[in-house]
Image (tube, rainbow, N blue to C red; front, top):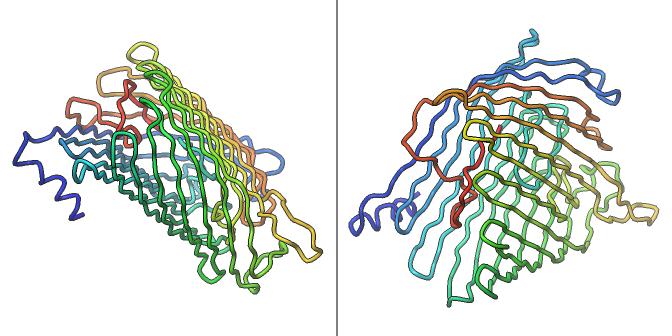
Length: 418
């Protein structure tokens, strides 16, 4: 916090104050989860209608040496079928870029999602591991801080640290905490194109279950394909060593200690235009394992499309898939066990209509599917319909930047996320 105050106060005496862009909206709505498939847990085979009331805050602030953006949306939900389930969801997305001097840049990114038992699924906007637990009440948090040192127009070095955690109220799920560090270098090959290399080290802590240490090596190529297109390709390898307590392991044949190696990779492709935006992402990497208590490989994918029709109507289509698989640990028989633990897929079609100044109506349909081979996760297949009314409480005049767009120009106003 002290560093942020220095960045804010530093240039104040040498330049005019920066501009603060703020939008605050109220939100109320209703959704219905129903049409459960035959594999659904019998205890949950029913439609459920949930009411919602909340706020949405977006702001961005820029000075000569500092840019920050924040999105925060708390909302209260309660079932309307008499079951009495209720809870408050919190979503936070924060980004900051600050130039400490002409060669040294600070980058900060933070994401937090806290969901109650009535919010078992929410659309995502990046490739990430998604699983639906038998009970909600979970917290996911990620903080990434890095320093980028520029040596010349074509070469720079990066040092970063990452802290993430997943916490669950369900006693059958295992909390995990990750602390990592990375060292990398980047080389500009041409205008808008760069090559990056990085070495990382992470520790996965599972409390009473033990821990895993992971070392990663990666190469990445990022380029701008014209003014509006952005491409990033990643590839590399990992080495993992587990130190798990046998008394706390599930019956999947894991040893107390195990060394494993494998490959990792990723793809991100996006197009930004004023009236049309789409993004595509896929990744394969080692992961702490969502709720499992040991490291796994995770395959994730995301596709998002949005388009504006005139000034009042916006349409969107989102889809994401996720899979967790065992690392090739040796089982008691000596055979490699690569079974799939969880598979997840979801798609959402949405519409956003601004029918009056400061008033916006949102609606959509989602289909959620999950298959699980481990007890804490249910086999799911259900549909969701939702409609929300958003109303403007305060507007400073200009649309705030999104945290994901800090540091690069964009001509597209990002659509509001559900």
